[in-house]
Length: 204
Image (cartoon, rainbow, N blue to C red):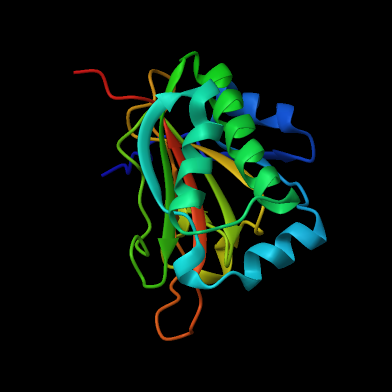
């Protein structure tokens, strides 16, 4: 009997300019990754913060209101104003605006997750049209194609500060997504991650 292999969208397009994220609409593209560098002093500040001083946030806002939402979350954990905090708040808003522009929406579902365990460590395709991920601190998101399930050497990992836009299971049209991703396992290592997640708003 002939085996039929289903075609999937599994291409990863990367670049060093933010415009690369718009390539998520390219035929066959499963993820677009902006390989950027965070200023060393700011990355050091993020890495040194005690875990209970990292901002956690879950909210639905307009992209233009993202900065104020992050500022409020930072104030709740007692982070003082400064250059590095200002960069973080402005960066989240910039990414929210870029995501909204690429996805053709005004509002976004915004999360900042402080991760200290193995939550979300199983490879998956999110049940959303697309999801933006940026790890501000700690090990970055890992990904691989669905064809390489038994090949751990085929797992790729984003660096801290990189921005990934991943197609989800609800992406309209084209081929089904053939790329899965996960948060890397960190339990027992004493690590803390700060992860930004941006989704479109679910319509009821």
